[in-house]
Length: 378
Image (cartoon, rainbow, N blue to C red; front, side, top):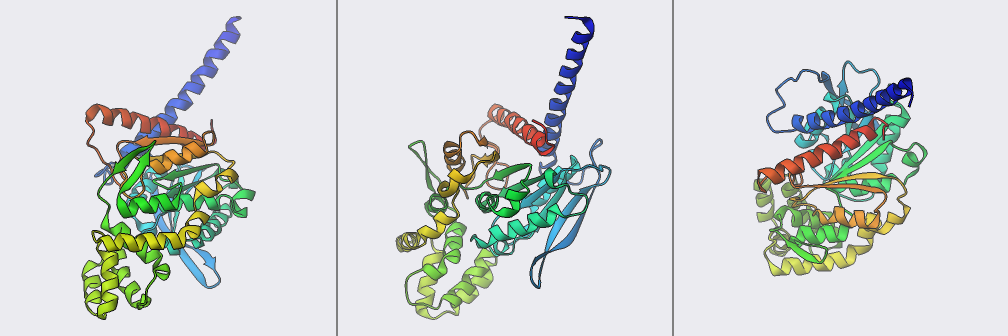
């Protein structure tokens, strides 16, 4: 091989290697920035950012806020839209704020919009429309190039985002990359886990103590389908206090209910009652068609785009078996990583230092490849 050609090959390989190394360094920095307690420490070599709240038109006479995280000294910025899950904190959720800040500090222009129904902790089809509306808004936002938008769906927003990706807004101007975190493949099996703490991984049963909040959310979402003669609006007013983490107000509202409504409310608030599970099973039978409508397991054959799927093995809200199920259905499209370090919204160590280090390295490799996709590189 002529010396000039050899030098050219070495130069190309060096540039290629540097680009990959840079992506992994940025991924490691991103994960480091999200560690508890880092927020007040400034790091050299990172972009300074500003955080502001703006508004977008959600519908006629309906204006909703979004948070914008902007790196100041980078002129050509890839845009990342993060859709929050079913949480009353909405766009102000502390974990999403940490993620958005970290992404902005490594050079992304990050949008976190409020999705009204998911902020009310209601996971129905209306949020699919909200996602499409905001995505269209971002494609027209000053400084954003339509071909440089990545979308991220967290928790229950992830499955809904896959449905939104099939809608015209994201079909006509496809996002560069799509990532789901802690999301579901099938709503029915996810809700059964929420109710019972049980799921199956390749025939082996996983059993954890279910979070009582999960059953409350279940009945809150499907209260109109609960059989029985009771004042649904009065019971809803009690449940909404618990959904929004106001148990004292919820207890006071419960105490004011008539005896019959109070007994029905207690079935929804006390997951240990066997009659409560029987009632939940009856509701699941009724709402099964609604669950199928928004479950990727029922429309996976329409998913013809690659997606990144990240899940915590210690997730007690949506089991990691949902990510495995999606990978089985879409083996070529799904790039999957299940981390031993994460639960649903927090770090969750406990498997020893070496497994933790191994999982940390896996996270860096996964996020490094994802950041290359965000930048438009393979």
